[in-house]
Structures are given as C-alpha cells and as structure tokens.
Length: 488
Image (cartoon, rainbow, N blue to C red):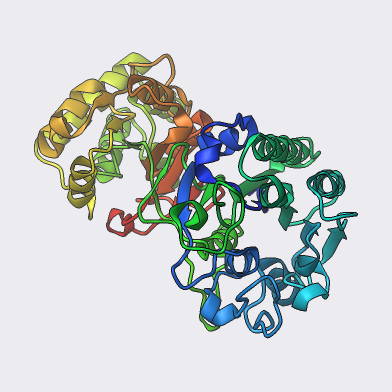
C-alpha cells in the first residue's frame, strides 16, 4: 500500500547563511544531510524584506505577480496567487495547517493575511516587540504545532519562527543572534520529533523544507542589496531526494511552493502560472541494474528458462515466465524444479540455465533505448556508477564487452553477496564499495524483484519497466524509457 505523502515547511526568518557555519544546528544538519542545503539568492526585483520574500516562497510566484512589496501587504494580489496551504485547502479539499506569530501572515494587520484560508491555524502574537517576547511567541507557536503534527493529520503545513530576525534587528548579528538561531534549531528538532512520533509515521512519506527569507547586515537590518542581505538558503529532504543530492540549477524562493506540490504528487494547473518548479537534483551515485534495464536480455533469459524447462519436461506458461524475470539462476532453477517434479537436481538446472543464457548473450545483446546516452551523461558528469546484476559473473562480463567496463566504478554479480535480489544485499554491497550510504544512491531498475531489493536497501528508485507494469510510489519514479531520465 503506498505511503501517504505529507509536507512540512519551516520558515525561519532572517538567518544568515554564513552564521550557520558558526552555530551548532544539529537538527537542520539532519535535514541537509538527508537531502540538500543550498544558497538562495533573493531576486534583484524583490526587496530584501520579509513580506515580499515570504510571499514568493509560499505562493510560488514572483513579486510582480503577488504584489507584496513591503511588510505592509496592502494592494497585494494573494487572492489571485494564493499560498500553498490556502490553494490546497480550497481547491483540493486537503487538510493544511499554519502556525505563526507574525501578525500579517495570519491576521488582517498591515494588509494581511498572507495565509487566508488554511484548514487549521494557530497564532500567538508576541506580547511586546522585544527579542525575548519573540522567543516566547515562537515557543508557543511550536508547542501548538507539535500537538497538531503529533495528533492531527495535516497534509501540508507551514510553521514560522521569527525570533532570529527580530533579535538581529534589536541587537545585531552577534552572540544573541547566534543563540536565537540555535534556539530555532532546537524548535525545529521538536517539530521533526513530532513527525517521527506520529502513530502513522511508518505509513507516511514526509518531505521537510526549511527555508529563510533573507539575510542581515552585521549591525542588523536588511532591505538593501548587499550579499549578506540578499543571500538566503533552503534545506530539503524527502522520499524523492537522495541524501547529499546536488541541485542541477540555482534554487530560487519561488521553487519552494512548487516543491511542496511535487512532494504531494499535485501537478500545478497551468492557469496558476507558477514561476517556480520542483528542484531537479543529481544523486551522489547511480546504481544500475543490467538485464532489462541497460540491455534487452530479458527475452533471452525468458527463452533460456523456457528451453531448460522444456528439456526437463515442462512447458513454461506466460504467467510462469513472468515469475522468472529479475531472478537469479539459482532462484529460477528452484522455481523450475517445482514445476517439473521429474527434473534433474537444482544444481543441474542452474548450470543449464547459466550456460544457455550465456550462449545467447555471447551472440550479442542490444542496448535498451537511452542506455548509451545515460551512461555517457553519467561519465561526463563524473557521477560514480555501479552495475548491480542478478546474472552470474560470466554473463555480466560478457555484457560488459558491449557496455564498456570502464563506465562503472564497480560491478556486483549474482553470488558475490550472501543473498541476491530481491534481498537488499547486492545494493548494500555496491553502495559500500562506493563508500556511500544507500540513501545517497539512485537505483535504476526494470523489475519488481530488483525494485524490492533497492528499496529494502534504502535507495531511491527510478523504474523503467521492461516486461511487468510498475506503479509509482514515494521514493520511486516510473518512466517509460531511459531516454526520459533527463534529470535525477
């Protein structure tokens, strides 16, 4: 059963990127290590103020469309270009949630609200315009958000923390500012814990985005065009992103809302005229299946199974043939033995299968559409690549004469791990040889057996079905052909 997709966006106001290098932020680091953390440059046309930047972040359109030009939102066009929580609630009937202390975000103060119609809202205004009052307001905001995220079921949420920005305004970007950022990270940790302690967490696929709107001058304050003010950042992790992924292009504030929609499998309507798009990324490594994925050997394997079955007195049906795809020689031999009670011992069947298949492969194999281009792009991009096959080493080496052994940093064949696909061992072994965690690796597979192995190992998967239909799922994309694998 597919896991339910959920999204949490945590907006932390006014956190300088360079400050993150000095301040311990273990919870933000967890998000970054599970996905990516990258700089975001505020667009030249956008004032480096909270109102315009947050409006761009949550609507997915630039300032010329949403028309929030300052921290007074009067004259905005948020009715035409609503935030993602309002759009999802009103147009799709989804459960959404917003928690914020800054009044224009959630009340009519100063031309607001920026979030007019989430299906759930909590608000605690600061008692005074002081750093401590803002810390208290953020604390109350997170307390309520933890309760909602733990016990209720919002599909898309936005939680705003404003104390770091207000501290910088009052006291500059010194020790108090760094302490406020550390406190915000601690609150982020409580929100992440709330997700993990949900009774339904194992059945859910959460995407988490943590984003800031702008930076600050050293003395505190923003609104100018200096690099310190114009540099923001985004951290993102989720089931569709490999650990340590690299965005293929510069990330923009307007991409955040688009990433939310993508995480929920919600295709934006063209009438929304979003300026942002989901962020395409490169994984740290790509692990490729061989048979049926890179080379069109599945028909050869099926013919070999039929030939061996016939030699032992059984005619393989189409349904039975589907059961051998993606399987090892040993597994297939054991399967054929159950179909042909009078067949020879399993080891004899296994040898017959391997010899028959190898003979067919040595006569020549065809590459699957897009395979050569994919291998060339991986090589040109210097992306570590491994071949992970359920075929015996003799067959793998024969196919490598066509693929080119130099393309792969390592290859894993059947029999070189304790267990073969559908167990995770081959993919765990390939990741270990590349000195990477499995979550940093993208697997390209064609069969349910291989996909089961890759997902059990904790890898992200792109499925390119060859003989058996495959459904999309969190952490798994399905493409018609390798030629469509233009981004990872």
